[in-house]
Image (tube, rainbow, N blue to C red; front, side):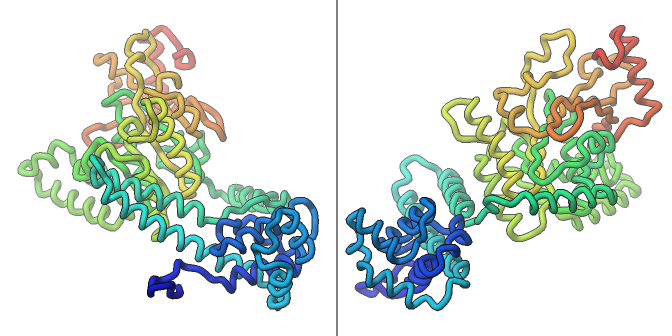
Length: 460
Protein backbone atom coordinates (compact mmCIF):
# COMPACT_ATOMS: atom_id res chain seq x y z
CA UNK A 1 0.00 0.00 0.00
CA UNK A 2 1.47 3.31 -1.07
CA UNK A 3 1.13 6.83 0.36
CA UNK A 4 -1.35 9.26 -1.13
CA UNK A 5 -1.59 12.99 -1.00
CA UNK A 6 -1.40 14.55 2.43
CA UNK A 7 0.22 11.35 3.77
CA UNK A 8 -3.10 9.52 3.39
CA UNK A 9 -2.43 5.89 2.53
CA UNK A 10 -3.54 4.75 -0.90
CA UNK A 11 -6.04 1.90 -1.08
CA UNK A 12 -4.55 -1.57 -1.70
CA UNK A 13 -3.42 -1.84 -5.30
CA UNK A 14 -0.76 -3.21 -7.64
CA UNK A 15 -0.58 -1.11 -10.75
CA UNK A 16 2.26 -3.32 -12.04
CA UNK A 17 0.10 -6.46 -11.78
CA UNK A 18 -2.79 -4.70 -13.55
CA UNK A 19 -0.48 -3.63 -16.36
CA UNK A 20 1.07 -7.10 -16.63
CA UNK A 21 -2.36 -8.78 -16.71
CA UNK A 22 -3.63 -6.58 -19.53
CA UNK A 23 -0.33 -6.87 -21.37
CA UNK A 24 -0.34 -10.68 -21.11
CA UNK A 25 -3.89 -10.90 -22.47
CA UNK A 26 -2.90 -8.75 -25.47
CA UNK A 27 0.46 -10.50 -25.94
CA UNK A 28 -1.14 -13.94 -26.14
CA UNK A 29 -4.93 -13.76 -26.70
CA UNK A 30 -5.26 -17.46 -25.86
CA UNK A 31 -4.07 -16.73 -22.32
CA UNK A 32 -7.19 -14.67 -21.59
CA UNK A 33 -9.36 -17.78 -21.27
CA UNK A 34 -7.24 -18.98 -18.32
CA UNK A 35 -8.29 -16.00 -16.18
CA UNK A 36 -11.59 -14.92 -17.74
CA UNK A 37 -13.67 -16.33 -14.86
CA UNK A 38 -11.22 -15.24 -12.16
CA UNK A 39 -11.02 -11.48 -12.62
CA UNK A 40 -13.43 -8.79 -13.85
CA UNK A 41 -13.06 -5.17 -14.88
CA UNK A 42 -14.25 -4.08 -11.41
CA UNK A 43 -11.18 -5.74 -9.87
CA UNK A 44 -8.84 -3.13 -11.41
CA UNK A 45 -8.00 -0.05 -9.34
CA UNK A 46 -7.27 2.35 -12.17
CA UNK A 47 -10.27 3.46 -14.24
CA UNK A 48 -8.29 3.32 -17.52
CA UNK A 49 -7.30 -0.27 -16.72
CA UNK A 50 -10.93 -1.16 -15.94
CA UNK A 51 -11.98 0.21 -19.31
CA UNK A 52 -9.16 -1.54 -21.18
CA UNK A 53 -9.87 -4.91 -19.55
CA UNK A 54 -13.59 -4.60 -20.35
CA UNK A 55 -12.72 -4.06 -24.01
CA UNK A 56 -10.24 -6.98 -23.98
CA UNK A 57 -13.02 -9.22 -22.64
CA UNK A 58 -15.59 -7.91 -25.13
CA UNK A 59 -13.19 -8.48 -28.01
CA UNK A 60 -12.50 -12.04 -26.90
CA UNK A 61 -16.19 -12.83 -26.52
CA UNK A 62 -16.78 -11.59 -30.06
CA UNK A 63 -14.28 -14.18 -31.25
CA UNK A 64 -11.59 -11.64 -32.16
CA UNK A 65 -7.94 -11.58 -31.16
CA UNK A 66 -7.38 -9.13 -28.31
CA UNK A 67 -4.03 -7.77 -29.47
CA UNK A 68 -3.08 -4.14 -28.96
CA UNK A 69 -4.22 -3.04 -32.43
CA UNK A 70 -7.65 -4.70 -32.17
CA UNK A 71 -8.23 -3.36 -28.67
CA UNK A 72 -7.14 0.15 -29.64
CA UNK A 73 -9.48 0.10 -32.66
CA UNK A 74 -12.48 -0.80 -30.51
CA UNK A 75 -11.54 1.82 -27.92
CA UNK A 76 -11.28 4.36 -30.73
CA UNK A 77 -14.78 3.49 -31.99
CA UNK A 78 -16.03 4.04 -28.43
CA UNK A 79 -14.24 7.39 -28.30
CA UNK A 80 -12.16 6.16 -25.34
CA UNK A 81 -8.74 5.50 -26.86
CA UNK A 82 -7.12 8.68 -25.58
CA UNK A 83 -8.64 8.09 -22.13
CA UNK A 84 -6.49 4.95 -21.73
CA UNK A 85 -3.30 6.58 -23.09
CA UNK A 86 -3.71 5.75 -26.78
CA UNK A 87 -2.07 3.00 -28.81
CA UNK A 88 1.43 3.89 -27.48
CA UNK A 89 0.37 2.98 -23.91
CA UNK A 90 -1.26 -0.27 -25.03
CA UNK A 91 1.83 -1.17 -27.05
CA UNK A 92 4.03 -0.43 -24.03
CA UNK A 93 1.96 -2.78 -21.88
CA UNK A 94 2.64 -5.58 -24.37
CA UNK A 95 6.32 -4.74 -24.74
CA UNK A 96 6.95 -4.64 -21.00
CA UNK A 97 5.23 -7.98 -20.37
CA UNK A 98 7.96 -10.62 -20.76
CA UNK A 99 5.57 -13.59 -21.12
CA UNK A 100 1.90 -14.52 -20.88
CA UNK A 101 2.83 -17.72 -19.02
CA UNK A 102 2.34 -16.02 -15.63
CA UNK A 103 -1.08 -14.54 -16.39
CA UNK A 104 -2.75 -16.53 -13.58
CA UNK A 105 -0.29 -15.06 -11.07
CA UNK A 106 -1.03 -11.53 -12.28
CA UNK A 107 -4.77 -12.23 -11.99
CA UNK A 108 -4.42 -13.50 -8.42
CA UNK A 109 -2.55 -10.35 -7.37
CA UNK A 110 -5.16 -8.08 -8.97
CA UNK A 111 -7.98 -10.05 -7.36
CA UNK A 112 -6.26 -10.01 -3.95
CA UNK A 113 -5.93 -6.23 -3.93
CA UNK A 114 -9.51 -5.88 -5.16
CA UNK A 115 -10.74 -7.95 -2.21
CA UNK A 116 -8.68 -5.86 0.22
CA UNK A 117 -10.17 -2.65 -1.18
CA UNK A 118 -13.67 -4.03 -0.76
CA UNK A 119 -12.84 -5.07 2.79
CA UNK A 120 -11.67 -1.54 3.50
CA UNK A 121 -14.88 -0.13 2.01
CA UNK A 122 -16.90 -2.55 4.13
CA UNK A 123 -15.18 -1.41 7.33
CA UNK A 124 -15.92 2.21 6.43
CA UNK A 125 -19.54 1.31 5.69
CA UNK A 126 -19.91 -0.40 9.07
CA UNK A 127 -18.37 2.60 10.82
CA UNK A 128 -21.03 4.80 9.24
CA UNK A 129 -23.73 2.30 10.25
CA UNK A 130 -22.59 2.47 13.88
CA UNK A 131 -22.72 6.28 14.03
CA UNK A 132 -26.04 6.38 12.13
CA UNK A 133 -27.55 3.32 13.78
CA UNK A 134 -30.82 4.96 14.86
CA UNK A 135 -32.89 2.41 16.80
CA UNK A 136 -30.91 -0.64 15.65
CA UNK A 137 -29.36 -2.78 18.39
CA UNK A 138 -25.74 -3.90 18.49
CA UNK A 139 -26.64 -7.51 17.66
CA UNK A 140 -28.46 -6.33 14.52
CA UNK A 141 -25.36 -4.43 13.42
CA UNK A 142 -23.19 -7.47 14.11
CA UNK A 143 -25.53 -9.63 11.97
CA UNK A 144 -25.41 -7.02 9.19
CA UNK A 145 -21.61 -6.93 9.32
CA UNK A 146 -21.49 -10.73 9.23
CA UNK A 147 -23.71 -10.85 6.16
CA UNK A 148 -21.59 -8.27 4.34
CA UNK A 149 -18.41 -10.17 5.14
CA UNK A 150 -19.99 -13.39 3.91
CA UNK A 151 -20.91 -11.76 0.62
CA UNK A 152 -17.35 -10.55 0.29
CA UNK A 153 -16.04 -14.04 1.08
CA UNK A 154 -18.33 -15.57 -1.55
CA UNK A 155 -17.17 -13.05 -4.12
CA UNK A 156 -13.50 -13.65 -3.34
CA UNK A 157 -13.93 -17.41 -3.71
CA UNK A 158 -13.34 -18.61 -7.27
CA UNK A 159 -15.64 -21.40 -8.47
CA UNK A 160 -14.79 -24.23 -10.82
CA UNK A 161 -16.64 -22.72 -13.75
CA UNK A 162 -17.26 -24.99 -16.71
CA UNK A 163 -15.73 -28.44 -16.23
CA UNK A 164 -15.15 -30.86 -19.11
CA UNK A 165 -17.21 -34.06 -19.06
CA UNK A 166 -14.02 -36.16 -19.13
CA UNK A 167 -12.99 -34.67 -15.78
CA UNK A 168 -16.46 -35.13 -14.30
CA UNK A 169 -16.62 -38.77 -15.43
CA UNK A 170 -13.24 -39.42 -13.84
CA UNK A 171 -14.50 -37.96 -10.55
CA UNK A 172 -17.68 -40.05 -10.80
CA UNK A 173 -15.72 -43.27 -11.35
CA UNK A 174 -13.54 -42.47 -8.34
CA UNK A 175 -16.71 -42.01 -6.29
CA UNK A 176 -18.14 -45.33 -7.54
CA UNK A 177 -14.89 -47.10 -6.68
CA UNK A 178 -15.00 -45.73 -3.13
CA UNK A 179 -18.62 -46.81 -2.70
CA UNK A 180 -17.85 -50.25 -4.15
CA UNK A 181 -15.10 -50.56 -1.55
CA UNK A 182 -17.65 -49.94 1.20
CA UNK A 183 -17.43 -46.18 1.67
CA UNK A 184 -20.67 -44.24 1.91
CA UNK A 185 -22.05 -40.90 3.00
CA UNK A 186 -22.24 -39.66 6.57
CA UNK A 187 -23.94 -42.11 8.93
CA UNK A 188 -26.25 -40.57 11.52
CA UNK A 189 -26.11 -43.78 13.58
CA UNK A 190 -29.62 -45.06 12.70
CA UNK A 191 -29.20 -48.04 10.38
CA UNK A 192 -32.58 -47.93 8.63
CA UNK A 193 -32.27 -44.21 7.87
CA UNK A 194 -28.67 -44.67 6.71
CA UNK A 195 -29.76 -47.53 4.43
CA UNK A 196 -32.50 -45.46 2.79
CA UNK A 197 -30.28 -42.40 2.27
CA UNK A 198 -26.97 -44.25 1.69
CA UNK A 199 -25.58 -41.74 4.17
CA UNK A 200 -25.80 -37.95 3.95
CA UNK A 201 -23.54 -36.27 1.41
CA UNK A 202 -21.81 -32.88 1.62
CA UNK A 203 -24.34 -30.35 0.38
CA UNK A 204 -27.39 -32.34 1.54
CA UNK A 205 -30.16 -30.69 3.54
CA UNK A 206 -32.11 -33.17 5.67
CA UNK A 207 -35.23 -32.05 7.53
CA UNK A 208 -36.83 -33.89 10.47
CA UNK A 209 -40.25 -32.52 11.37
CA UNK A 210 -42.74 -33.35 14.09
CA UNK A 211 -45.15 -31.96 16.64
CA UNK A 212 -43.74 -30.66 19.96
CA UNK A 213 -42.61 -33.39 22.34
CA UNK A 214 -42.17 -36.11 19.71
CA UNK A 215 -38.41 -36.39 20.19
CA UNK A 216 -36.86 -34.00 17.69
CA UNK A 217 -34.28 -32.65 20.13
CA UNK A 218 -33.46 -36.16 21.37
CA UNK A 219 -32.84 -37.12 17.75
CA UNK A 220 -30.51 -34.15 17.39
CA UNK A 221 -28.60 -35.18 20.55
CA UNK A 222 -28.21 -38.79 19.36
CA UNK A 223 -26.98 -37.77 15.92
CA UNK A 224 -24.57 -35.19 17.37
CA UNK A 225 -23.17 -37.72 19.85
CA UNK A 226 -22.70 -40.34 17.13
CA UNK A 227 -21.09 -38.13 14.49
CA UNK A 228 -18.87 -36.14 16.88
CA UNK A 229 -16.92 -39.30 17.71
CA UNK A 230 -15.08 -38.89 14.42
CA UNK A 231 -16.01 -35.52 12.90
CA UNK A 232 -16.63 -31.95 13.95
CA UNK A 233 -20.29 -31.14 14.65
CA UNK A 234 -21.99 -27.79 15.24
CA UNK A 235 -25.37 -27.48 16.94
CA UNK A 236 -27.49 -24.34 16.78
CA UNK A 237 -30.09 -24.61 19.51
CA UNK A 238 -32.48 -21.68 19.30
CA UNK A 239 -34.90 -23.41 21.68
CA UNK A 240 -32.86 -25.13 24.39
CA UNK A 241 -29.93 -23.69 26.40
CA UNK A 242 -26.54 -25.32 25.78
CA UNK A 243 -26.39 -26.56 29.39
CA UNK A 244 -29.58 -28.56 28.91
CA UNK A 245 -28.28 -30.05 25.68
CA UNK A 246 -25.10 -31.11 27.44
CA UNK A 247 -27.17 -32.65 30.23
CA UNK A 248 -29.01 -34.69 27.60
CA UNK A 249 -25.70 -35.77 26.08
CA UNK A 250 -24.48 -36.93 29.49
CA UNK A 251 -27.75 -38.83 30.07
CA UNK A 252 -27.31 -40.52 26.68
CA UNK A 253 -23.64 -41.47 27.02
CA UNK A 254 -23.77 -42.27 30.73
CA UNK A 255 -27.19 -43.98 30.81
CA UNK A 256 -28.16 -41.78 33.73
CA UNK A 257 -31.77 -40.50 33.68
CA UNK A 258 -32.12 -36.78 33.11
CA UNK A 259 -34.28 -36.48 36.23
CA UNK A 260 -31.36 -37.53 38.41
CA UNK A 261 -29.02 -35.13 36.64
CA UNK A 262 -31.42 -32.29 37.43
CA UNK A 263 -31.46 -33.40 41.08
CA UNK A 264 -27.82 -34.25 41.59
CA UNK A 265 -28.35 -34.96 45.31
CA UNK A 266 -30.02 -38.23 44.23
CA UNK A 267 -27.01 -39.48 42.25
CA UNK A 268 -25.44 -42.69 43.53
CA UNK A 269 -21.74 -43.52 43.43
CA UNK A 270 -22.37 -45.59 40.29
CA UNK A 271 -24.18 -42.62 38.75
CA UNK A 272 -21.25 -40.33 39.50
CA UNK A 273 -18.89 -42.82 37.92
CA UNK A 274 -21.08 -42.94 34.79
CA UNK A 275 -21.33 -39.14 34.71
CA UNK A 276 -17.56 -38.84 34.99
CA UNK A 277 -17.07 -41.24 32.10
CA UNK A 278 -19.68 -39.45 29.96
CA UNK A 279 -18.29 -35.97 30.62
CA UNK A 280 -14.80 -37.25 29.84
CA UNK A 281 -16.03 -38.54 26.49
CA UNK A 282 -17.80 -35.27 25.70
CA UNK A 283 -14.77 -33.18 26.61
CA UNK A 284 -12.84 -35.07 23.94
CA UNK A 285 -15.48 -34.61 21.22
CA UNK A 286 -15.24 -31.98 18.51
CA UNK A 287 -18.66 -30.55 19.32
CA UNK A 288 -19.67 -26.89 19.28
CA UNK A 289 -23.02 -25.53 20.53
CA UNK A 290 -24.53 -22.08 19.91
CA UNK A 291 -27.69 -21.40 21.92
CA UNK A 292 -28.38 -17.88 20.65
CA UNK A 293 -32.12 -17.25 20.99
CA UNK A 294 -34.02 -16.52 17.73
CA UNK A 295 -30.84 -15.94 15.72
CA UNK A 296 -30.70 -14.38 12.29
CA UNK A 297 -29.84 -17.04 9.74
CA UNK A 298 -26.92 -14.84 8.69
CA UNK A 299 -25.52 -15.46 12.21
CA UNK A 300 -25.72 -19.24 11.73
CA UNK A 301 -24.08 -19.00 8.33
CA UNK A 302 -21.29 -16.75 9.58
CA UNK A 303 -20.49 -19.04 12.52
CA UNK A 304 -20.42 -22.19 10.37
CA UNK A 305 -18.20 -20.74 7.65
CA UNK A 306 -15.85 -19.22 10.21
CA UNK A 307 -15.51 -22.57 11.99
CA UNK A 308 -15.10 -24.41 8.69
CA UNK A 309 -12.24 -22.07 7.80
CA UNK A 310 -10.24 -23.05 10.88
CA UNK A 311 -11.08 -26.73 11.47
CA UNK A 312 -12.57 -29.84 9.89
CA UNK A 313 -16.35 -29.89 10.04
CA UNK A 314 -18.59 -32.87 9.29
CA UNK A 315 -22.18 -31.88 10.16
CA UNK A 316 -24.39 -28.90 11.05
CA UNK A 317 -27.53 -29.37 13.18
CA UNK A 318 -30.17 -26.64 13.59
CA UNK A 319 -33.02 -26.74 16.12
CA UNK A 320 -35.33 -25.51 14.71
CA UNK A 321 -36.36 -23.76 11.47
CA UNK A 322 -39.31 -21.72 12.76
CA UNK A 323 -37.20 -20.11 15.50
CA UNK A 324 -34.64 -18.70 13.06
CA UNK A 325 -35.02 -15.20 11.66
CA UNK A 326 -34.79 -14.87 7.89
CA UNK A 327 -35.16 -11.96 5.52
CA UNK A 328 -38.56 -11.14 4.06
CA UNK A 329 -41.71 -9.09 4.48
CA UNK A 330 -43.85 -11.96 5.76
CA UNK A 331 -43.47 -15.31 7.50
CA UNK A 332 -43.49 -17.30 4.26
CA UNK A 333 -40.64 -15.26 2.80
CA UNK A 334 -38.67 -15.44 6.04
CA UNK A 335 -38.99 -19.24 6.25
CA UNK A 336 -38.07 -19.50 2.58
CA UNK A 337 -34.92 -17.52 3.30
CA UNK A 338 -34.10 -19.89 6.19
CA UNK A 339 -34.82 -23.05 4.16
CA UNK A 340 -32.86 -22.09 1.08
CA UNK A 341 -30.22 -20.48 3.27
CA UNK A 342 -29.71 -23.84 4.99
CA UNK A 343 -29.43 -25.59 1.62
CA UNK A 344 -26.94 -23.03 0.32
CA UNK A 345 -24.97 -23.29 3.55
CA UNK A 346 -24.71 -27.08 3.08
CA UNK A 347 -23.29 -26.51 -0.42
CA UNK A 348 -20.97 -23.66 0.50
CA UNK A 349 -19.60 -25.35 3.64
CA UNK A 350 -19.53 -28.73 1.84
CA UNK A 351 -21.19 -30.55 4.76
CA UNK A 352 -24.63 -32.04 5.38
CA UNK A 353 -27.07 -29.84 7.29
CA UNK A 354 -29.87 -31.31 9.42
CA UNK A 355 -32.69 -28.88 10.08
CA UNK A 356 -35.45 -29.64 12.60
CA UNK A 357 -38.90 -28.22 11.91
CA UNK A 358 -42.36 -27.99 13.42
CA UNK A 359 -45.57 -29.32 11.89
CA UNK A 360 -48.84 -27.43 11.55
CA UNK A 361 -51.60 -27.95 14.09
CA UNK A 362 -53.85 -29.12 11.27
CA UNK A 363 -52.48 -32.62 11.73
CA UNK A 364 -54.41 -32.79 15.01
CA UNK A 365 -57.76 -32.41 13.24
CA UNK A 366 -57.45 -35.49 11.02
CA UNK A 367 -58.35 -39.08 11.85
CA UNK A 368 -54.98 -40.25 10.52
CA UNK A 369 -52.56 -37.99 12.32
CA UNK A 370 -49.46 -39.11 10.46
CA UNK A 371 -48.00 -36.01 8.87
CA UNK A 372 -47.76 -35.18 5.19
CA UNK A 373 -45.26 -32.90 3.50
CA UNK A 374 -47.94 -30.20 3.27
CA UNK A 375 -48.04 -30.15 7.09
CA UNK A 376 -44.62 -28.50 7.36
CA UNK A 377 -45.37 -25.36 9.32
CA UNK A 378 -45.50 -21.89 7.74
CA UNK A 379 -43.72 -22.56 4.46
CA UNK A 380 -43.63 -25.10 1.65
CA UNK A 381 -40.13 -23.81 0.93
CA UNK A 382 -38.76 -26.19 3.56
CA UNK A 383 -40.01 -29.14 1.52
CA UNK A 384 -38.73 -27.57 -1.71
CA UNK A 385 -35.21 -26.90 -0.42
CA UNK A 386 -34.70 -30.21 1.39
CA UNK A 387 -33.05 -33.27 -0.12
CA UNK A 388 -34.46 -35.55 2.59
CA UNK A 389 -37.58 -35.02 4.69
CA UNK A 390 -38.42 -37.31 7.63
CA UNK A 391 -41.80 -36.86 9.33
CA UNK A 392 -42.01 -38.07 12.93
CA UNK A 393 -45.03 -39.80 14.48
CA UNK A 394 -45.77 -41.63 17.71
CA UNK A 395 -48.95 -43.67 18.15
CA UNK A 396 -48.80 -43.19 21.93
CA UNK A 397 -48.68 -39.40 21.44
CA UNK A 398 -52.35 -39.60 20.43
CA UNK A 399 -53.28 -42.91 22.07
CA UNK A 400 -51.81 -43.04 25.62
CA UNK A 401 -53.03 -46.63 26.08
CA UNK A 402 -51.07 -47.99 23.12
CA UNK A 403 -49.00 -51.00 24.38
CA UNK A 404 -45.71 -49.86 22.79
CA UNK A 405 -45.43 -46.22 23.91
CA UNK A 406 -41.75 -45.81 23.08
CA UNK A 407 -41.90 -46.47 19.33
CA UNK A 408 -41.15 -43.50 17.09
CA UNK A 409 -41.92 -43.59 13.39
CA UNK A 410 -39.92 -41.57 10.89
CA UNK A 411 -41.54 -41.60 7.45
CA UNK A 412 -39.04 -40.56 4.76
CA UNK A 413 -41.50 -38.76 2.51
CA UNK A 414 -38.88 -37.09 0.32
CA UNK A 415 -35.54 -38.55 -0.67
CA UNK A 416 -34.06 -36.78 -3.65
CA UNK A 417 -31.28 -39.32 -4.10
CA UNK A 418 -32.91 -42.53 -2.95
CA UNK A 419 -36.09 -44.35 -2.01
CA UNK A 420 -38.80 -43.30 0.39
CA UNK A 421 -39.57 -45.59 3.30
CA UNK A 422 -40.44 -45.97 6.97
CA UNK A 423 -37.92 -45.99 9.81
CA UNK A 424 -38.95 -47.42 13.18
CA UNK A 425 -37.05 -46.32 16.25
CA UNK A 426 -37.13 -46.90 20.00
CA UNK A 427 -37.29 -43.61 21.90
CA UNK A 428 -36.16 -43.55 25.54
CA UNK A 429 -36.92 -39.97 26.53
CA UNK A 430 -35.31 -40.07 29.98
CA UNK A 431 -31.95 -40.85 28.36
CA UNK A 432 -32.51 -38.82 25.14
CA UNK A 433 -31.77 -42.07 23.35
CA UNK A 434 -33.13 -43.08 19.96
CA UNK A 435 -32.10 -46.39 18.39
CA UNK A 436 -33.40 -48.65 15.64
CA UNK A 437 -36.24 -50.97 16.66
CA UNK A 438 -35.20 -54.62 16.57
CA UNK A 439 -36.82 -56.87 13.97
CA UNK A 440 -39.02 -58.79 16.42
CA UNK A 441 -40.26 -55.57 17.98
CA UNK A 442 -40.94 -54.10 14.53
CA UNK A 443 -43.21 -57.00 13.61
CA UNK A 444 -44.98 -56.80 16.97
CA UNK A 445 -45.50 -53.06 16.52
CA UNK A 446 -46.97 -53.54 13.07
CA UNK A 447 -49.28 -56.24 14.40
CA UNK A 448 -50.49 -53.98 17.21
CA UNK A 449 -51.12 -51.12 14.78
CA UNK A 450 -53.09 -53.35 12.47
CA UNK A 451 -55.11 -54.60 15.42
CA UNK A 452 -55.70 -51.08 16.76
CA UNK A 453 -56.67 -49.48 13.48
CA UNK A 454 -57.86 -52.47 11.47
CA UNK A 455 -55.21 -51.67 8.88
CA UNK A 456 -51.93 -53.07 7.64
CA UNK A 457 -48.81 -51.00 8.19
CA UNK A 458 -48.66 -50.17 4.48
CA UNK A 459 -52.06 -48.51 4.73
CA UNK A 460 -51.17 -46.30 7.66
